[in-house]
Image 1 (tube, rainbow, N blue to C red):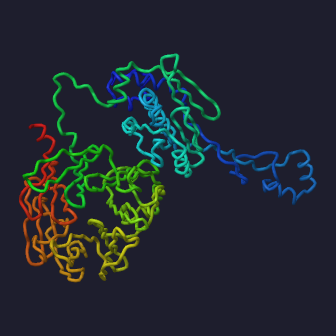
Image 2: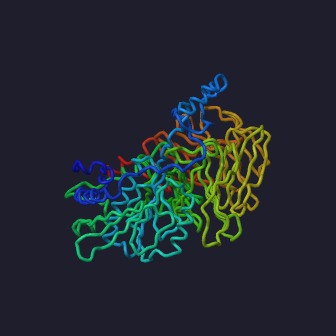
Length: 601
C-alpha cells in the first residue's frame, strides 16, 4: 500500500483497510495525534529513605557524612570544626529519583446512543492512536466498553469488535461503580482514558477524558481531551458520507476486483505442529491454522450427513476448549490473560486476569503450541462454581476459579494451585481425571463438577513417565476409566476394572504410543494401546493378547488424536489433510483436504 510519508507511523493499521479508506482515516489520525500526545512518565512516590548515593555534596544530614570526614574528626577535631564552619565537609548526595513510566493504558469507550454513527469514527481513530502510543512506550494496552462492566480486552487488534459493539443503553451510575471496582487494582502509574459524551459522569480513576459531540453550527465533530487539568479542543472534519459509512460498517472488506479469481481455502492451511482438540462429546474438532488462528469443524454422526461450514477464530490462543458448539479459549496479552467464551455468568463475557508469576506457573511468553486446557462448571449457588484448568510447561496444574453462580456481581476469577508433577490428564463430561507422579508413587485423582477438591481414586507404587486415560466401556453401569502407565521407554502397564486389574505390555519396535482404548467396541473388551508405527503410516491397537490394525495412511501421519471417550480417531497427514472416523469403523465422518487439492478443484 502506497501511503503518504506522514502516515507511515500507522501503516500497520492502515494496511488493514482498502486504500480508498486508508487515506481519510489517516487524515483523522494526523489531526487527533497532537491532542493525544505521547505516553509520559509518572513521578515516583516520595520515599523517606534515600534512593542511593549518586554524587558528593558539601551539605547534607550528618548520617550521610563520608567516612573520610569522620576520620578527620578522630585525628584532628579542631580541623573538623574549622571545615564544618566553612562548609567544607563532604556528604554523600542522594541519587535523583527516576521517573517511572506508565505500565498500562486502559481505554473505555461509550457505545451508547450518543456515540453511534459519526462519533464511532473518532473512537476508531483514538483506538489506533492509543494502542500505538502504548506500544511505543513499552506499555500494555487494554480496552473495554463502559456499558459492559468489568470486561477488559487485552488484544489491541480487536478494532472490529469495538465497531460491532452498539447499545441503546446509556452509561449510568451502576456501570461507573462497577468499573471503579474493576479498576481498583491498577497501579498509580497506569492510565485510564474515558471516551464518550460530556453528559456521562467521570470514573474515579480517569486520567484523560475525551468528549465527542456533534457541532450544531459547523460541519464536523467537536473533540475535546482533558488531561492533567488542561483541555485541548478540535473541530474534526469527517470523511465523505460514503467512505465514513464503509469505515463504520465494513472497514476491513476489500472491494473485489473485476474478473478476480475466487479465494481458495488456503486460508485454512492447517498447522502440523499442533494436534487438533476434540470436544467432550467428539462432535466438534478444533484445529490450528499455519499462520495463526483456529478453525472449528463439526464431526458428523454418519458419512451420509450433510457437512457444515467451518467456524473460524482469528486469534492465536494459549489454550482452547470446545464446549458444545463454542470455542472457549485463553488468550495472552503482556502480563494479563483473557478467558473468553466459557459458559456461565462468571466466564460468559471475556474477563481479564493477571498472569501468574513464572516461579508459580510456567506459561509461554507468546502464543505457540496450545497448553492443555479444561473447564468445569457447577450451577448450584454455593457449589464448586466455574473453573478453567491449565497444565503448565513444568507439569503444574492450576485453575482460575469463581465459586457460586447465583450472585449478580461475581468477582474476578482468582488463580489456585491444584497439583504438581502431573503426568497425564483428560476431561470427560463433568469430570476431570489426572495423575501425578512423585517419590516412587503415581496417584490417580478425579475432580467432579461439584467437587471443590481432588479425590484420590487409585495409587500405584511406581514412578510413571506418562499416564494415558480412556473412556469407560459402553453400556456398562459400573465401568470405570481405562488407564495406561508408562514405566520406561518401552514398558507400559494397562489398567482396567476400577483401577485394579493390571496387564504389562512392551512396545519395542519404535512405535509411538498415542492413547489407550478397548480393542473391540463390545462391553468388557480388553484394554489396548493405540500406537503409531515408526514409519508413521500405520495405526494399531495392541493388547496383551492381540494386535489390530486400525488405519493405514498413504501419507505419513503428523498428528494423531483419540477423542476422550475413545470412540473417534482424528489424524493429520504431512500433506495437511485432516480426517476423522470411528475408531472401530470404516466410514469417514470428516475429511478436510489440503489447500492445494481444494484450490485445484
